[in-house]
Image (tube, rainbow, N blue to C red; front, side, top):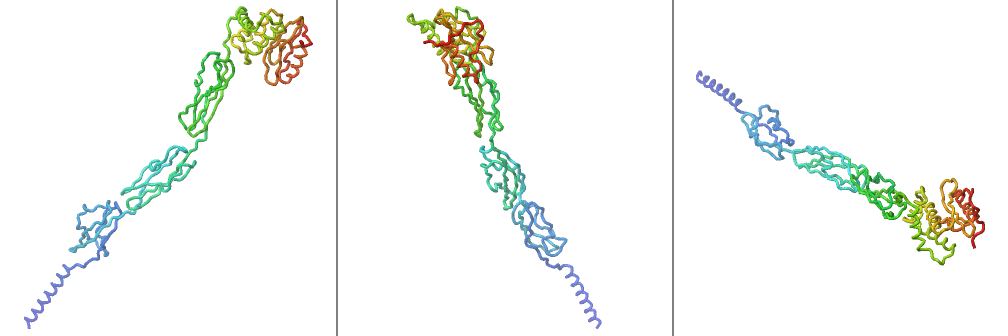
Length: 413
């Protein structure tokens, strides 16, 4: 009996030891998560997250240097909890859209094109990024318009960035400065472009054209020159100026110089068989047709006035008077210089004696609509013409008759 009890006691002890040993070596099997997803670029997850059950002693068996979360791929890993080993995987995904910065851009209508680089300042992502316009900008419409740049990364994540395209329309013409009237003497040259500048609200440099086709440098007169500038948008501006060509001031003109000119003319127009009246008519006609009216003259001396008329064929009423005075004087006829009494403008002509009568002699040309032959006219003739011009040129043939002979009242036959 005693031996039997000992055996049973021994067996109990052995059983107890076996139970204790089994409790020490047996570990429950955990439920592993087969795939753990991480965002591209994020750090590796803790080993504990791979299990459904809450564990605290899980650890990686895989060499972590071989796992790169900056690469989109599936990474297989081994994990250990206690004496058990588990297999799982880490899947690296990308759901983060790219980032970027844009700027506004300005162009002029009809000039050039736009590129993405004109709007996109920078873009950033862990993968390659492709940039594109959501809708192509409309380059044919002036004003402001919204421009959307779409950034797309390798995983298909997109970001829309907004900027503003401003298209200016150039409707403002260039500005020409420095245009002014030019006054030169006959025979001088003209520097049309001197001191002329052109500026524009858009174009930096603009040339200009000068139309001087109206100018005749060989003739005294007033002409028009046109300056024109056109910018790239086709806006045009023009400025006009007058070119006034004058006779150079005459120096010391002598009676002999004027007589020489008068005699040269008379030699061409007078013949021995002419009557006295015909000779007067020839002098009148030559003066009237060979002196061009330009509206101004040097009235300091009748000799200068006559010389200008003979030598250059230009002048105003003073030159017509002076040339006819020189011709009539060389023909040997009596004459008296006449000048209009004070009035808004001056006028000069002659009284010429013929067959004991005095007549008005004025070869000055007349403007269209006011034609008048001033050859040997009576006093009623000039008074009627003066009345006709009363509203246009007051006192045309009004003069001081004091000390002067009476003018014929009956016209020549």
